[in-house]
Length: 106
Image (cartoon, rainbow, N blue to C red; front, side, top):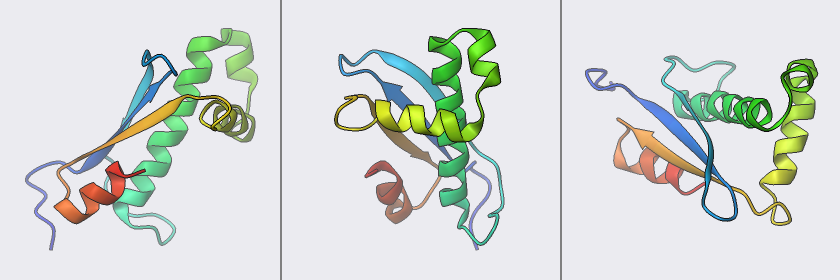
């Protein structure tokens, strides 16, 4: 059984090719969903929040509020491709060392 006295979650940090922090998102929600392990679900939710934060920061409010999750994911996918040159750095909080390595190796 996992010790829940320390919170478990993930933090995603998006940086530009020059190292400028574009956005930060996190997820400390408990419980797996749809058969995923807790940390994998947290990664998915944090990534979605990070993508939304980037679009909200760099696009107009009218545009960012009109875009659906699929479109946002495609736009962010291009940013974080080799061509786009942007990067996501992952940090794990409160997880055992093996899961921390898995999360941070992304």
